[in-house]
Image (cartoon, rainbow, N blue to C red):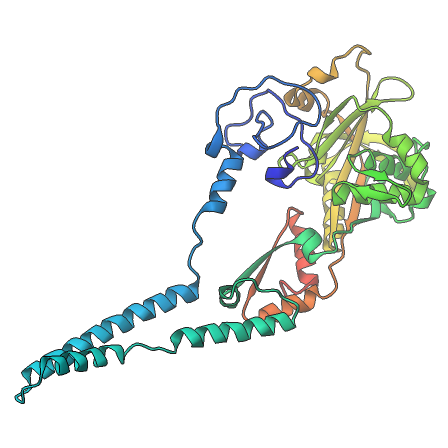
Length: 420
């Protein structure tokens, strides 16, 4: 469980296999970090960093580092240095003028006159003026329900020219819902299903039922009498659609089916793979993730008008239809996932735990059968569009950071006025 370091709520498996040389440490499956917890399993590990050299140590060191000066502090410091130079020059000039004066003066008079000229240059009201100005700004911020702990934070906020924001849960509600399931109705066209109540987990032939069943085979869970969903927003969206269509009990029956092997979703692969026993014998492999990643492994596709699907070879023309349909869904500000499956017939005594990620890619993910696309929508939060427009009016540029497909990100950005 790397939540303490990465913020990811889902534990990730560790694998002793060597990772790619350019992989960042947080993506390396053969590393375990100090400060994280082992959810299950056991391993023997080699310690090669301790103390401040660990990831947790680096975080602690960054927190202890000295606070950098704000722009206002730098400007005031520069102004004070300039005034000090001017005061010293004026004081020396007064001292020299008094010494060169033909009328002789007492030494005490000369020193007092030079000191007076020097201290007269010091702006005594500078500190009170700056403090009172920041206090007034803080009071105005408080009237807008913004708490300010340090006065210089107001000045820092005033210097902001670019705001970078996460999309999911910040600009959007973080409440994703499954809106569309799209599958091939013919080799040249796809049809969308938006009413999931007609699907059935026991139906293994109809494509929408097959898609929804494969969709809810993920790491999200539903608990309690009030049906509380726990998991990543995308997986929860699948789970909610299944519960609404089939009820909690039937969804849990699907989830309770044993998992033989799993490749969890991560930002590098952009797909999730699950192997489970099949009722009629053998195994059922299911793959879901970014459409461009899923279709790479698909050699066939289900095609059928009205949901009854037959298997046909995947052609370049069908690939183009998938890309076009995915772009259509993304243009509607929807996150798009592809799903595929295939039957397998590994021996009952096959050691699934010994299968490495490389072995899985070479043997489990080949010859997949494409089923369809999911369209998942996360609407913007109320008031976000107005806030973005206010930022633009104040000369502040707003940048949205997201792991979604660029087309989905562009659609959301247009909807909330980040881009015209």
